[in-house]
Length: 163
Image (cartoon, rainbow, N blue to C red):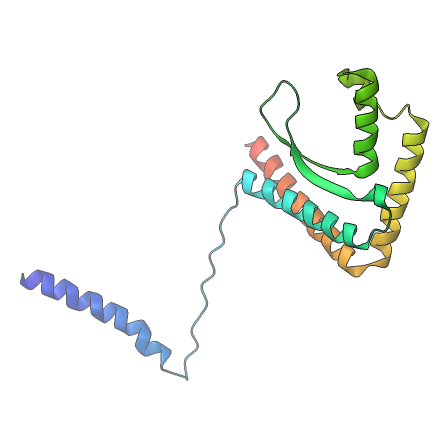
């Protein structure tokens, strides 16, 4: 019983010591910073979040209806693994159009590069996005955050594959 009281008294004294140090103005208290490692899946989620934030800012600034971008999770045929996808409206419309004409022939739906109208629309979309990024600091910042998240993810992925 006496040992328990002694341990309890030491414990209370240990707790009270930092509190008494807080009251002293003449001594600086150091900050302790703990830096942890983020998992690959956490970094991947941060990439998705940064990408969605970029497109959210982009959509606010964009005045072209066909260039509005929507991000979602897609479940490709034959797998249970969802892919994070961000697509402009004109791309979704082109995929729908091809799918309705060609059935479920995925090779034809996926190969849009042979479609000259689609290719031209893609070039215009990319130019439109580049001009919006160049003109808007908020969009530039969102793009910087996205690039930073991708860089951290790729660095971690490369480091874990080399081990």
